[in-house]
Image 1 (cartoon, one colour):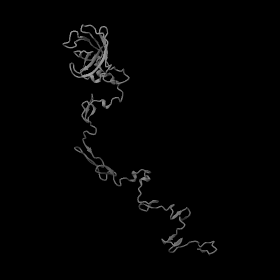
Image 2 (cartoon, one colour; image 1 turned 180 degrees about the vertical axis):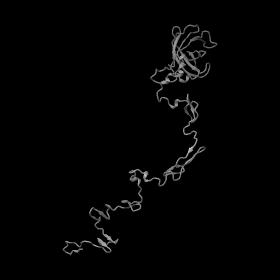
Image 3 (cartoon, one colour; image 1 turned 120 degrees about the vertical axis):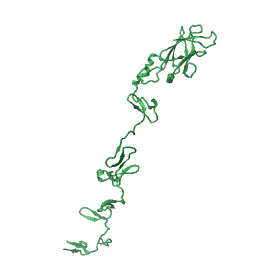
Amino acid sequence: MKVLILIGPGQEENNVVRTLSVCFAGAALVASLVDVSLAVVPRLINYQGILLDGTDKPVTTLVTVVFTIWDNPILGDSLWSESQMVTPTSNGMFNVLLGSVSPIPDSTFSSDAYLSMMVDLDPEMSPRQRIVSVGYTYHALYADSANAITDDAIDLADIGQNGAAEGQIMKWNGSAWVAAADDAGSGDITGVTAGAGLTGGGTSGDATLDIVAGAGGGLQVNANDIAIADGGVTTAKIANGTILFADIGQNGAAEGQIMKWNGSTWEAVNDETGSTDGWADAGSVVHLVTGTDSVGIGTATPSAKLHVDGDFIISGKARLGPSNNSGGIPFLVES
């Protein structure tokens, strides 16, 4: 494509007139790279042209060229720009890689783009050249590399809104993903039936289920929860060996007391076995634990080691007094 570009209207004849022959060797820029295992796509545009002066002679000296991409063919906003030192060949041809000085943003080609040149101190060449696709860049619309996307590579931030309203989800409609309402936890219910031990239900409107009184198996329905009713746990519901000491309350026991069955219930009482008071069972002998204690039979206030208040019967022999005491005479009662 050959375009005659004037420096500007009203310039003197000796001002430079440049003829620009433009060749884009791939004017599409791939927006993202998806896998390092693929060939890295260069983010550069190959640009060639021929510079001629006002007498149509090739420009062969070093010049400074400012390349700019605009969003409009006449005015508009600058999308990208860079300056390069260019030394054309003997026939005025030059070749540059756009983006080699200042990287071209991915967003540059999101809409129409127009390239302009400004050589040395000359004004911008006119008209601006529209950047178009080459044949195979159309195929890039199908993103061959999409099959190479690694697992877990797409983050939530990478997914566009796609017309979704607040609370909607992505849902497969049979042919494509669409934004749809989240049906989780909702839907059409034709009826709620109360089973055994339950009451309530219904086929329309708000339906409520309650536990029938006495049929809850030890459950108690409160305003905001379901709890175990008093007396609802029986021995059949307690696994053997699962009750620990920490599970048993103090039940009024004092230090050193034990649990003892009194004939109708368990109660906390003194521990007489191995205690420092009372009787001790030493196998074939039962004796007082403390030698200074007395035994009262028929009296709570014995006045001797053995105080019997009332009749007693001795079957066999009874010895009173020490048998080896020379100072006294043993008293022996024989049957």
